[in-house]
Length: 447
Image (tube, rainbow, N blue to C red; front, side):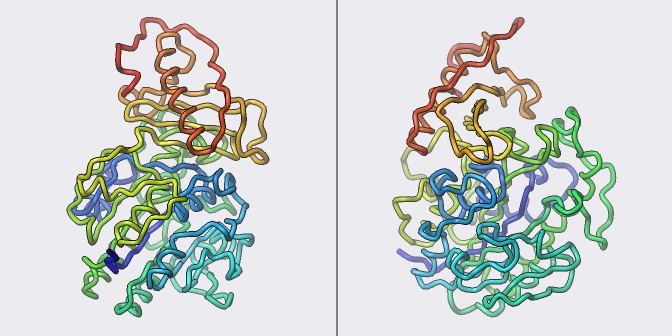
């Protein structure tokens, strides 16, 4: 039964999961998200199915994987035959609106109407980094007219969202609010803090960033300041909902497209199998999500679309490859995937799975990561024990002691590739290397 709950997706870009207090960051950057996670439904282990902007957004909008859609890398427009969440909310009588970064069209500035994923109200840009700067926010309206918004870009988009809320108190709506921050500024590879914010000095540095050579010591203060400002913007949206009497009638989701490893795993910020690249902050509140507690299952961005539709009583279409969280929240019996599946492009043609304990990754040695979406031949590249090594500083791939673990995970990965991609590739074992006194006890490979 349709519930007519309003829906807001508050979507950041390139935000590490461990920027949040509920994930252990001690710098107090996200009090509003933390409260939302504690009072609503906190997804403790959320992951992107594709750690790069465009593909991750395609997966989120459609509930399908990147190779299913053809959006396996950036700069591929989302084909118009693929329905986004807006299609289904429109059909259910909702007003649908998009504000901010789209990154799923053929242009970087004004997005042609037919490429907007059927969002009815539009105030966005193909790439905010192309149309705007931190203090020069330019987006495009329904008629492709340039609109300059006042204030820092994060505040400017938030102001636009609050104006939308004020003007849509009667009819149910689905609003997607999409920021560029805390993504780096492409034009100069920087992470500029808003000028009005107190600088964050001596920021908490996660162990992976401390141990590996990258740019975190240069960029964390600005990155954390942007995370903090985004959380303030989230708080302003929450305040607006409360002041308008819409708080419990509005489902609010906070999440991001991928993480940020600050050039520690490759030559840029993402596109790797590591937690710093694929793990996300995610929480829901409002409607059925208030008081939902902590979800400990492995959840993917492809699960968002079916979850939001289901929560609003809209039938989940069979072509969606993700799963609704609602049966978990209702404590209904049923199977949930035991692995999170990740496709990687642009840096490599890679695949990975994440279980509660293990991370296993492979890459195609003879494929072009820009031209090729998949391969029939992969080679093992990574195995991490996330229980003992949560920041993935000790790659166990190729150790004879862990061959049994790799074999179990290889079978699981091949099964996910067959299920999602309809392919049956070969995975080549990593070369053996000495393992010293390491060992794995019976049964641990299945955790």
